[in-house]
Length: 440
Ligand SMILES: NC(=O)c1ccc[n+]([C@@H]2O[C@H](COP(=O)([O-])OP(=O)(O)OC[C@H]3O[C@@H](n4cnc5c(N)ncnc54)[C@H](O)[C@@H]3O)[C@@H](O)[C@H]2O)c1
Image 1 (cartoon, rainbow, N blue to C red):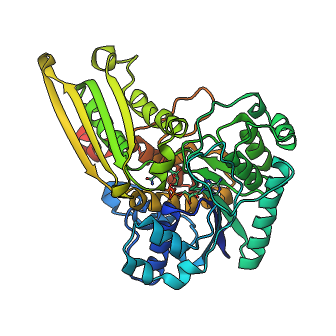
Image 2: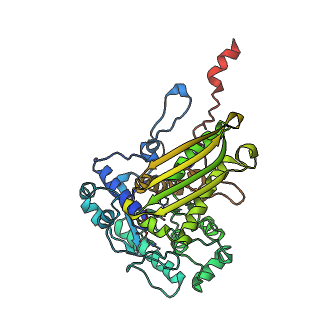
Image 3: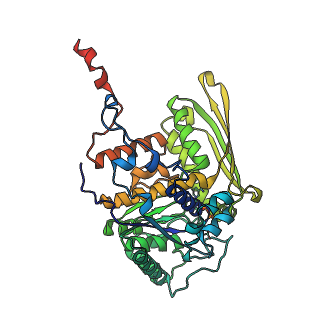
């Protein structure tokens, strides 16, 4: 396939509900990169290469030179938060980056202030703020968001936009009847139904305007039949959910390796301490439940206990997150992994990951924004499973299990790019390099 892909001309506006730690870290990084002060470390779109053709051809351009992606110098930002802090103040509060790092881009960060948010304490109990919209019902709030977006696009002179959800994790609630069709969701929004969450209102508003939406948190927002219907009707891409960073990133790197070697697993115990605002929100059991569901699903899909009962039929998996303020964003994660090998002999692996959550999440959020814009210009719409690489709980078509193995996800992503650009797919078969042997 060599699709007609619209060029990345003009300005891309990235809309971001939730302007806290990840968002301020992402923006500070982009401003540093623009000034030539930093390299985009951790960003596949900016630093990754893609091999084209045979290994002997030695042709591996940068991804950003291979596909038409928005240039970092042509991106604008706008967003919403329940707090009024501009992005410099938010960065100072989040304490992810040092004061000198923030000071170097103070003017750029200070110029970005949040618009008033659609928020309800019913879904996020542990925080409250003054910068919140009021409206006569949920539909009215969605229309206010649409007005915000149209106005901002005009002010910034942007011809394209995407939305990425970087706001707090909402309390767990399984999708209900109101989410089953677009008509039932719209009716529920007009009637102010209590099960309509803010994240769904943002998603509805974005998609209604033809703006792609990606969900960085584990709450549902676009993985609902009603929203999928809207995305397909408007031909807009959607993706989610929950940025794959930290402990789950490690799980999806190590898990496939253990399985590849047919090593068994008795148990995987994961615990974390973290002290940022995200940790505070997740301290509420209802909000943690949303995260837990997202984190637990990963291993089962990688290990396939039904197919490998002798190796993975009985393993015990536990995930804990403990709010511990002194640590701020500098999360510490411990994994104790009980494995077994030949002759059933037990072995243990210990991982102690002293990570920085927002440092891992920022390039992921940037990449997704750029790829969603690309997807939109390539006329991809509905679920973007090829972007599973970035998510803890990748969204898939109904009845299809998600692929969690990070290396399969990367191959899928790169092959999707090759496919769209009309290049040969790479299967890694490599038989042609040895065909001369058969000819002899
Ligand atoms: N950092 C990571 O590695 C990581 C990984 C996966 C998912 N996440 C998720 O990403 C989200 C953001 O993480 P963070 O560390 O930046 O958190 P944060 O608490 O620093 O920022 C979230 C911001 O969202 C705001 N907010 C809450 N509800 C809102 C609403 N309805 N509308 C607008 N703003 C709202 C909060 O006021 C806060 O400023 C969280 O849901 C987190 O669980 C983070």
